[in-house]
Structure formats: structure tokens, C-alpha cells
Length: 144
Image (cartoon, rainbow, N blue to C red; front, top):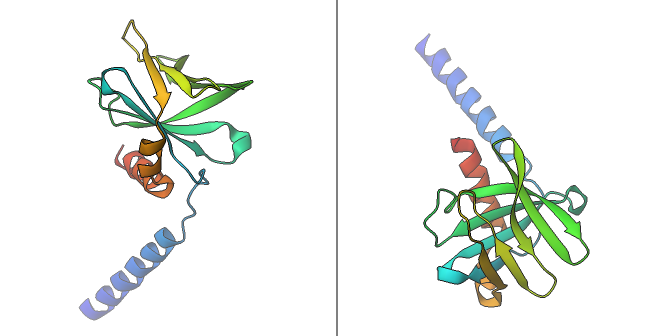
């Protein structure tokens, strides 16, 4: 009886592992874009899903705020060369990040009166890895 239970447990474990291994990962862009700004703040962005979905993963680092290091899935509104990244805060759409066509942007954090000026950072962007960034996001979502 114990032998049958052990075999059944092994088969079930193998099936679960196989299913997890075949789970498809969401599509993301090939490159992470990084922005740096006032007081050392850094913002990392990565297109999430098909381009027509207008979604992005956004992470804010090097700042003392509740959103520090949390990767958020945001909606992206394209307005010419400008991109507005928004998230729901207290049931309302909140534009947290605006990126303009001239490699500049502004970061708005809930609860803070002032925005942070941002500039595209090529060197920091080259350090980013899209697949690692996606993995971090998926692991964060699984922990919640």
C-alpha cells in the first residue's frame, strides 16, 4: 500500500512539474528601458504583452517610497511621441509616468506633491535583461 502511494505521489509530482515547465510566458519587448533622475531615482520600463495591448511593466528603484522595487503592470496611452503610463490608485486612473519623445520624462508618485524629472539612461538600459525582469514580475505576482 505504501509503495502504491509513493508511486502515485511521484507521478503526480512529475505531472505538476511538467505542467509548470510548459506554461507559456507573456510576450515582452527585447529591451528594458531605464530612466534616471533627481535624487538618484531610477525607473525601469518593459513592454508587456503584444504591442497592441498597450501595457508595460514599470519598476521604480533608488527612492524612499512604498512603491520602491515593486514591479507594476501599467496601461500605456500613446499621445504622439508622448507615452503616459497609468495604474489604478484608490479606484481611479493615476498617471504615474510620462515619457516624452525627447528622452525625458516625469515621475509622479502617489502621496507626493512634487514630480521627479527623468532622463533616458542608455548605460543603465544596457544592464537590464527583459527575461529576468519578466521573471521577477511573475515571481512577485505568485507571492501575492
